[in-house]
Length: 116
Image (cartoon, rainbow, N blue to C red):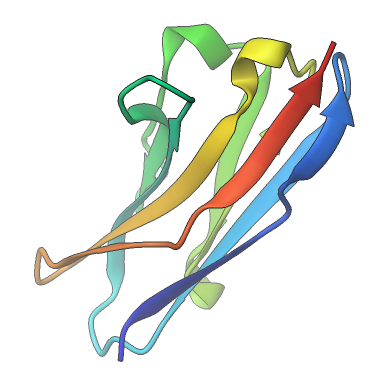
């Protein structure tokens, strides 16, 4: 069974940092694109950042210069280093993986809360 296991969420003060991790397992196919999305209360889910297996990266404008996405292809793991966190970054963060057979899997979500 293919699954994504996320970790690293929590509560942090504004200006602080958190690091999210997401590991994909259970598929015979390699992971092509891995990314992070978030859903804030009362808002739609939005892309935060994603990264291809060739390390082409895309960031939402709201996190450019503060968040860094990276991946370890050997471990099928993606990381999101979040710096200079703001209260508006508060959301449930979801990991997404697109495999080379174009199947898509989502993680269960991890809560990030930034207090002012």
